[in-house]
Length: 85
Image (cartoon, rainbow, N blue to C red; front, side, top):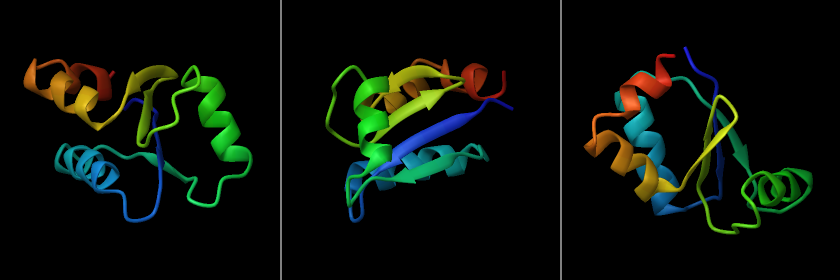
């Protein structure tokens, strides 16, 4: 199974949407809550090339993007191959 990381904030509907899609796939993921900022937020900014919106999703270290990007991978039939690699 791929290593999936998702940076989120409390009460973020896009974060909930992305996690719901991953949950529906049975995919385990590490969630990093950056609601209060801190070192994980700085880490996200660096890894996501300065993108400040959440969620920011990484699969096996590859930056996927946000919730819409994850949904597009699912729509195109590419998500399963990424998360089961």
